[in-house]
Image (cartoon, rainbow, N blue to C red; front, side, top):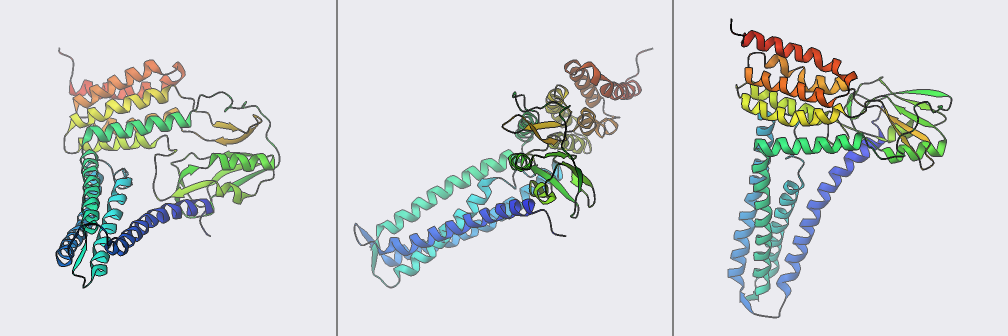
Length: 393
């Protein structure tokens, strides 16, 4: 069977936009290269000298394409091996694509301008001025790319960026605005149809909330999504209950899927990345990095401790419930953050002490009915610490 139409369209649009940007820069470079050398006004220069400069710039800039490619590959590999293979912030940064596309445009301008000049003896100084202006812009882009690269491989900016995006996702997944939550006891229309995933395994990246709410309102139906963004959908897995008369294809069209998790609507993704970084730091015995990652993890866990975990109910303009979205439970947040980290840190006192402090602080922010999730983890941490640091006799 074919994949969900919404997922294909979303993914294809992203690829298409990136390719169109490159084509646009190339066309602009070609247009300038064919137009600027035809200017007859103003001071002029010997044509052969200008052609030599254009050729040098074109070949030099073309070499930068290989450098940008190599830089991207090296940074992505470095981040994957030292932080997490799921961390794709540098790979997806717009400045990388923009710099590459602009470099191609400059190369096309230099080559096309040199051919346009041809055998003429003299050419307008505007050609050289345009080439220098393009070089200045390209230098600014390269400088921005350099700063982005430096940020992508430095620990503190990476942790801060992950935590910031995690906070944004939590705020979006748990909105506090009035009128967005309907009564859980609201009756659901009949009949009820369970929708299963008809495609190969893939990751649910995004739910098109407005689209699904609009479709459900038009059909006087309610869509209950069983899985939250970030879940891997398996073939045949029940993913939604449709209450009312609504075509399954409409629901599938409101789900964006892909091969990897993204920050957009996945509340657990930032927790997973911070835990990955903390775990990898323990392998080469770098507990300070693990402790630093736990600083940001504590902030996110404290926010999740105060967030509701019942499904989110989205209403239409008439305040009627139209879409129910599953959300991670409090146990999911704690398990993702700590269950792999506690046994890995069993022989590292500084990390265990920091985890204990994290659990104690988060427990003070959590509702009492959520303490039972934290208590056994805290007991395990204290048990490891007692073994490593027995009390004096």
